[in-house]
Picture 1 (cartoon, rainbow, N blue to C red):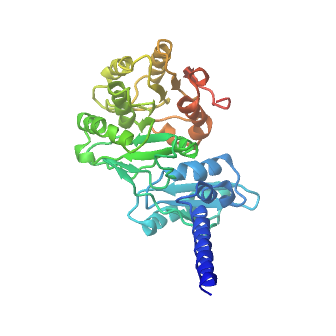
Picture 2: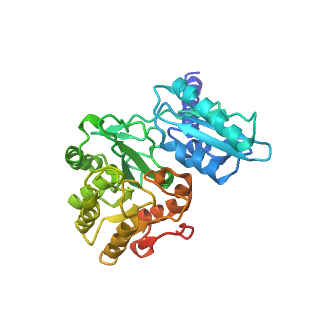
Picture 3: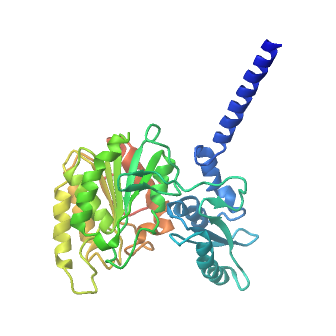
Length: 373
């Protein structure tokens, strides 16, 4: 009797262990397949347009809570979408999104068309039994991108540190989203952290110093490779940080990097091109890898074509892969990297630059889509 009960207890223990393992396998916070099933094309129903697929499966994942994704679809698969990020909570996100998305739907699909809220933070309406809980991990001043999968230092290919732009002391960018091209890296096994800063103290000197002091913490946490990525001032300071600590940085992805004000206002824009030449020159020839995305009609860039030529010239003198992405129209403006078309067309080049062997990584100036990697 004693042996039989003992076997029964062992059997129950094995059963509970198996059930726990099964639950973990279906938990989108611990199982990548379950996570991608949430943010997948299948979740969209009949909608299959390139814009909608890219917007939901990649762009939305860069949001921060409260976030909401709205979708309107016709029976033949035509669709329109919009998402919001960084609201006070999910309810506020829904309230802000619904009327704007409905207006989009009426314009794009006809009078009477309305949006349904497909996702609120990590909850997706077509997957009621699975919810992705926003990630709350922190390493020093860096916090995990809340809606991106966290592989963990032991399993990750490395870590991408995203730095948002700067809009002045009254403009808080901590609620802005990470571009969809960074979600491509997340899918490839990279963890994504954000370097969010209070705008009241977000000067270049202060921020750059804080970044440089904290970067070693990412290595100490177990990440073997570090990619710095950022938009506007975030991209500019990422290049500068990589030049100062090339021993720590594997690659830099700078989207519309700038730190000189706006072309339409009196400022120090005449120095912008020469300062950009200088920060490029500070990068060692052996590394890190660098990609800079530039856009026509960027009010913070007086001459994007000239900056593209500077990068092309620098690429010829560096062993490390160095590339300028200067997409043809219609992607343009200072926030061009947030455009779904940039994600779809140029994102593969960024992925290749970060991950490919040196001989296989793109170099020089690229204007066409990166369909060949």
